[in-house]
Image (tube, rainbow, N blue to C red):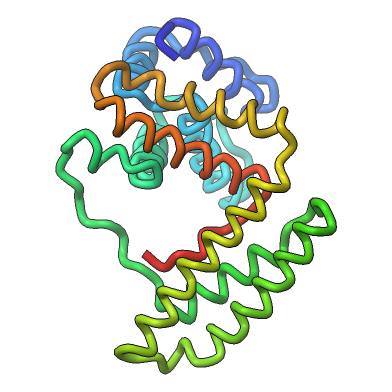
Length: 229
C-alpha cells in the first residue's frame, strides 16, 4: 500500500475496533510513526497483527484499561514485521544483515506444537484434504516417538522427514483451494510486497511473493509449519 494517508486511516479504523469503538486519532507524531511503517514496507495486515499482540497482552492483565494508542504498539508491530520478513525471505533477498533468530524449541516440543495445531483446526475442508491431514498426523506420531532421544543421523533423518511432510501438507492444501480462493490469496501476497517497491530483484520478488502466498494459505487453513528450521 503506497498511499500512506490511506494506510494510516485504515489502521486508525482497525485500532478503533480494537478499542471497542473508541476512536484514537493517528495524528502528529503518531502519523509520522505509522507513515514510517508504510515506508519501510510493513504490510497492513502485519501492522494489524502487531496491534493484536499488544492488545492481547494488555487484555491478559485484566482490569480496566485505557484505550490503546498506536504508539504503544510500535515494538510489537516491528517484531511482527521482522518475523514476516524472515518468513518470506526478504532479509536475505535484500542483502540485509540478519540478526540472530530466536532460540528454537526442542525437536520434541516442535512436534508437539505441530500436532496440537493440526488437531485444533476448527474448519473442516474437503474429505480428501482431511484424509491427508489424518495420514500426516499418523506419520508425525511415528516421527515424534523417538524425537526426544534422537541424536546424530537419526535426528537428521527426522528433520528431513519433516521437510517432506511439510511439502506434502502444502501440496494437499493448494490442491484443496478453490480457484477463487487461490486468486484472492495471491493478490493479497502481491499487495503485501507492494510497499517494498523496486528494492528487490525480479527473481527475489517472485520468490517472496510465492512465500507470502504460501504463508497466507497456511493462515487461511490454520496449518502449522512442519519444517524444523
